[in-house]
Image (tube, helix red, strand yellow):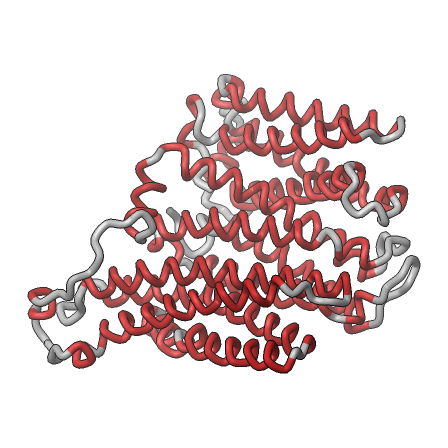
Length: 147
Length: 322
């Protein structure tokens, strides 16, 4: 997979539209997903109870847009460095945290939002960020990102 | 470009000293007259001075690189200037944050809690002392006649270095060594920087979108309550960002993306100030539509803060690779 022309282009091209743009979209997507989640989770935890929770749901499309951006750019980055990623423990920490955070989000939407779930949601998103950043420093990918 | 940066530093560096003297005088007058309005205005002045101190510190580092190898400049004086500047800058940040918090409280409770201007008075007096020391040492870099020495054109300056405090725990050298030599510091700071970014952008996204007309049923004061979290995110990022900067100033002072990031951030700071104190957004109740001016400010806020994210991500790519 890493030897496809797409993978080579992402990893090696000097073009602004290769690695820098992918990283930029990934970062903006991150702020949308985690940013919206933080605001909503903090509200559930009791910060600023004057905010009607159902009104905040209007922000969810932004979160989905961020998730779409990051799955897309995440897959592109994975294609470029698949071998390094699959052997990187931080990559699994990130993926499991994201899966857990999304599962919590879906549960919270179906049932009455609980404080425990909101706190867990914040915790898993922070773990996902920690895992994502650690990917650049753990395992064989140590030289991968210099952001 | 370097010469311009040096000029900016030499002109703007008067702001913290002169500005603090003016602001402190205003605050004393406000205390004497028990003028609550003047206290609030003065806190706003302190906040703006704190914002301006950031580019002054940054351009100072750029100036340091520009004059580094000149034989007529005493490296020890430059180092002493930098070390006091770092502490003065950090303390000015605390003054700025405390002033902002006072204004935020005053907006919410329509009354300023008295301990805040008192704390700002105390902290800013200390900051002024440090700024004055910074300014004196800074002046000695190019005006050795002030300390009784003569202008030198050769390496003579190095011979009669003034005695400066050597290693301390908060010197520029010590901070840089800590960041570079401790393996986890840079990585941990990056992670903190990302978390702070999400906090800052998340809150400002919700607040600015409300002003623009999305999530309109949320009364503005309810979102205003979240603003300290945005300031917390900014504080986390200012602290972690300064660790990067102090450890590797050359990566940033020579980097156009960094100057754009700084510019967007400073105007963004003014934008947050608007959201904190001004009536036009504060009065928005459930369902209320904002006027045109606050909408323009809110739209600018989104552009500015996502701009900061853009320039930050571009640091290693545009202008300079490192």
